Each structure stands twice: as C-alpha cells, then as structure tokens.
Length: 373
Image (tube, rainbow, N blue to C red; front, side, top):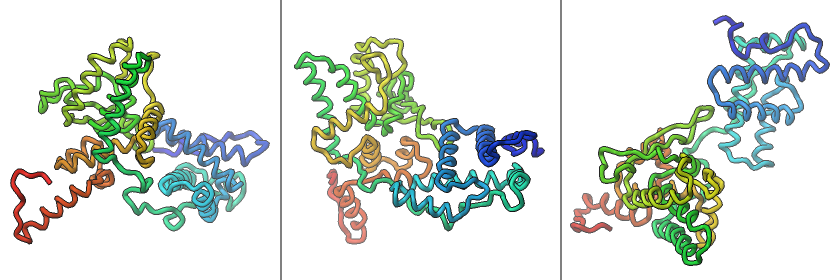
C-alpha cells in the first residue's frame, strides 16, 4: 500500500498552501482528524473514537503543550494527577495510558508522515516521540481490580431479596393501587438476572424473540435457551453475543408466567422488548439500578451488594452445586477461566465439604452415603 492510500496520513489532513493564524492549533486538529480517519478505517466504534479524542485534548490541556513537544515526564505527572487528585481506579488510568500510547505510536509511525510534517512546519527537532513506556505506566498485575468489597449474595440474602420483590406485588394488589404490573415485572426481571447470570444492560435489552428452545432441555419449552445479543463488548468492538442455557426450572416458570399472563396487560403487544414500561417504552439500566437499591436498602442489606452481585451469585451458587466450570464460563460469556474464577465466591460450608473430601483419601475417612454436607 502506498503512503498516500493510508487513512490518517499527514499529507491528507494538513491543509497546504494556506497561512494559518495559529499553525500549532491547526496541526493538532489535523492530527486528531487523521487519528479519527485511521480508527474509522479499522472499524472502531464512534463512541470509542470520540472518547479517545477527548482524552487527547485533555492531556494537551494538562501539559499546555502540543503533541510534538509531549514528553515521558509529562505522562508521569499526568498519571500522578489521575491517581492522587482524581483518585481514579488503576484499571481506568491504565486505559487512559493505553489510549495515549496508541496515539503516540500513530504520530511516530513513519508511514503516516507526521514526524516529517512537524519538522517541515516547526523546524528540525520539533516532532512527536514515543512517550508511553513500560516504566511509566501501570502494569496489569491482577485478574481483578474492582472494588474489593464487591461480593455475591449469600443464598439466604438472595432469597430474602427475591421474596421482598414478590411482596411488593402483593402489597400493590391489596392496596388496589397502581404499580402492581411494574412490581411484578421487576420481581421477574431480578429472577431472570440471577437465573441466567446476566449483567444489568444485557437484561434491559432483552427482547421476546431472544428466547428459544433447547433440544437438550425440552422440558423448558420455548424458554430453554436465551440469546443474549448485547453482551459486554471488547474495547472498540460491537457487543458480543452468546447463548445461555436455562438451568433453573423455577426461573423458567417465572418468566413464562410473566410473558404469558402479565406482560400482555401492559398493552404493548407490538413492542419487541421483554421488559416494557407502563408508558410503552423499554426499561433502562438506570431504572433497574434504582429499584435494586430501593429493595436492598429497605431490607437493610449491605451496600456492597450491587446489581452485578446477582451475576456473581449465579456463578458462585452453580459452582457450589457442582456444575461444570466450563459450562458456567460459556454461559456467562467469559473467554478465560480466570475471569470466571474472579466471580466465584463459594461459601464456607462448601469449602469445608471440599476440604473433607480432599482429606478423606489420606485419612482413610468415608463420606456418609446420601448426605450432602
């Protein structure tokens, strides 16, 4: 490929034959346009491209310099600012550093001609250099860097939460007030989040047509398989799809009852969404979060429990029940087993049982038949 064919090449973005009032600003804008063209040609999403562009502008404002004057020392200062003053999470800072590194690599790549263009415009030595290195960025040392207080529900807490959600339906019916349909919808929604190990956004974007039959589980009828079409995407990529096999019969019964007997009463027959509102729209992730917090706080449960804790519970409880780890990994959409391991928080009873099983051969012990400890 000739250099002239490269999307984002300097000579395609810099306006020639025009005297700029602020040549430095004009060059920076040309660089950003070029980077945008390069990423667009590679199929990256607009949201990703725009977020990266905003970040480069923020770094420029922080340094009060232009890209051809940026240095590694400024990356150190910026990272310290993000850590000490803005108190961002290590994973967020690493993401920012990665975006800055990619922009720096683009500018210093000879195929795009930015080094030559800067020296031509601003003189010898005025050109972008590599500024992000292993020694001035945060290393990815752990599989999980989220809030250490995050945890799944215990089985007792989850039962308490789901029972409370069901009680809200009964209260609305007894009081003969509005909200009974919405309460029933929300109670079922939380059961589906747990029964299929879903994220909040995945749940909100489910459609009726996403349910299907599973030949391996005919007893579940049309609810034997759930096609999740808006799974968590890799950076710059479209949402990932996955099929989740139904494993909890009670959850299947709950969603079947909702779809057949409750959802039609919303009067939204033509709406594709599984979870519809009383005004005929689709329920949003923020609404799921708000209802979750209301129920959690009303029960006095720990603030460490968040909607994502329901997904954690799915993984942990299936693990405790002896379900194959690979099956769980595929159902929740993890590429690596290490990701699934992060979600696994087995109870002390399970660990004690596993310990006795491990020690039994060495100590000559025999497990009592027919007893699940």
